Image 1 (cartoon, rainbow, N blue to C red):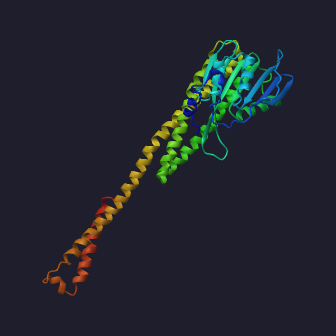
Image 2: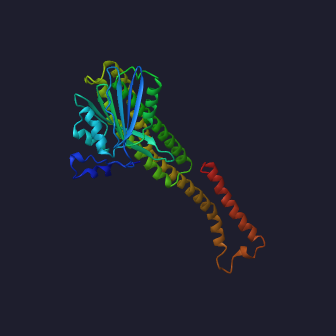
Image 3: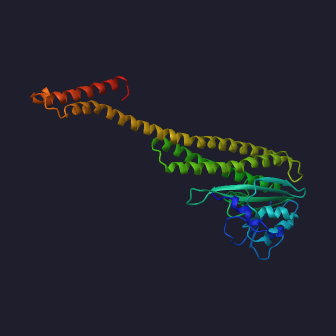
Length: 355
């Protein structure tokens, strides 16, 4: 998992207008996709950072979605921010990707930060990326570090005319994108839950020292998910109960449903965290049980051979006068005594149900 603590130091001592991206994504050219849509259709345009662009002019019934992929080019971030009259501090929060999910009502626009989670192709590591939203009247801008798969599903729905997005406002588009991100949380939680379940079965059957590292990895991922979901609950709650004119009463009903989904995610995360927290105890208990079983077997074996060792030791002493040494049946007698004593002990253990 990408760790965000180290990114916070990259802006130290830099001026506010520097807008230096602090994440780990490749510093590729920023791509801006403008999607203007309405009941009548969709118009899409794309340009790379540094290329001339057309400022969207949405009609009364037309909504505009400006999607900024890649945060490495400050000029593009400023240009899109200028369309909403964004404060420089907001622009700084967009490129400083260590932000926690939050919502700020700036009267003319709403600024929001959320987290996108995914499992990268060919990797078992849970990856985190920051997604920022600026909601204005009939306009929504999204800023993301790189690819966010849930956004593509929303884009496809708009272009295909499925659902109610075309007939609703930009606030509903914000809901649709957030809902897609929250659904991705369920996918990640399902994968984490499967890993936890598989590891739990392995700990009971055949625990190994390497399993402790896996437990730590799963616990770290679950804690990161909890840190991302807890503040998201507050954000969605404010969207559902807020008084901003940019959010229609009709759309707030959808945000309330989204709030229930976030609560469900929180409950799932807390449950998984409790399970992972107890896995160390399961590991230690299984190892201790296995060690006790081994020690039990070794102790029983030692106890069964103890009478044999005693008899062999007695008749191995270097005394010249020992009646049994000259007796023809002395050897069979000694072997018989050994077997009888060991057999008696074995029967006693069986009767006591120790074996």
